[in-house]
Length: 113
Length: 114
Image (tube, rainbow over all chains, first blue to last red):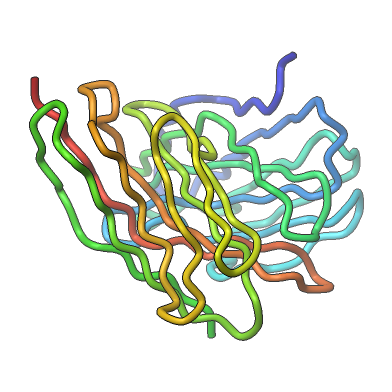
């Protein structure tokens, strides 16, 4: 039972580079989410997806792009990384949109130099 | 808008002490409430939840009661262990056509010393 996985777990990049963080879940959950975790802010929602090919912005979407061509994958791309995007990124999934529990991946720690 | 406020940490306790972490919320509608725990170096795990007023969620010795009248969902444990050292997040979600987005509090770091 693989659950929800993220890759890479750690990434160092430079300002201006494009970075893609991967998220994969094996439960066939409809909903998937991307959060960033920063000291003093808790977790903030970047983007979410209700199903394949359906995505929507969260609280802090600027500078990020998502896609969802397959139900099980939900990659997050930083088109031109900035230092302010240094953070820990968590992917999550849930079975449906009706107050369902969200299950989180282990996180990706990203450092932008 | 919706928001969750929880006490700032760190909270430092001795083993077997009583733990309370306060959580209050504001929401348009009737939210479901959650406590998530994040152990060092790991992702968030659901600890417990409550979906309606007066519900009590419980797991691993932790309890929290959904208090609509005080808009609170305080987390308690009667006797903590070193292994309970973690960051605890209170969160809420509402039924919305666009999805069940979670709104998190800022997290409370708990350190239990032997």
